[in-house]
Each structure stands twice: as structure tokens, then as C-alpha cells.
Amino acid sequence: QVQLVESGGGLVQPGGSLRLSCAASGSIRSFNVMSWYRQAPGKQRALVAGMAHNGLTNYADSVKGRFTIARNNAKNTVFLQMNTLKPEDTAVYYCNLNQGNDYWGQGTQVTVSS
Image (cartoon, rainbow, N blue to C red):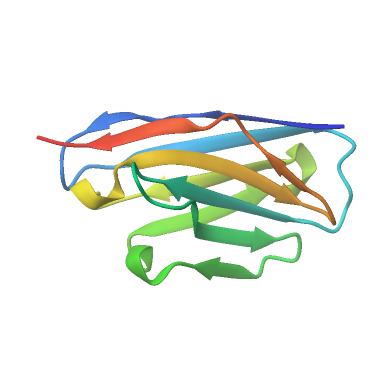
């Protein structure tokens, strides 16, 4: 079993920054991909950024240059630094671990509003 716990969401003004964290515990394999997804009201869940165990990254076009994903393999944690936030970034953000199976966190709300 794998558990993912996210933290760091909240309310921020446009142009502001937030840092999300996700800690994974349980049966974690060495080879995996840790990612952040988001789901806005009325929309499907979509990939924001992902990072493989070897450091390879993938970003949604809408966040390139503003968001940065990082991970600590020794601590099974992944982070999402979000800068220059826009109202359209408002969503519930979910941490995902893929190691053959998909595991999800409970989600953390990010609201960008003045």
C-alpha cells in the first residue's frame, strides 16, 4: 500500500506564489514517476507536471516557466513551486505516484483570487 499526503494549498492573489508538498509512504519502488495533477470545477483532471526518479520532467504548456517540480528521492517527497499564479490556476491539486499502479493523494485546494 502507498499513501500520499499533500500540503501547501491555500488562497493567494494573482501574481503570487505557493509551494505544494507531497509525502509518499508505504511500498515505494525505486523506479517511479511522481506528478501533480489539477482539477478545476467542471473540468477533467489534467497533468500539471511530472518528474521521474531519474530527474526527467514534463510540464503542461500552461505552466511552463512559472511552475517547477522537484523531488527528494531519499524522502519520497515531491514539491511544486508555483510562481506568477493566475486565476485560471485555481483548482484542486492532486499528487500522483505511478510505479505500475497509480496512487493519489486526497488533494489540496489552490485558489488564486484578488
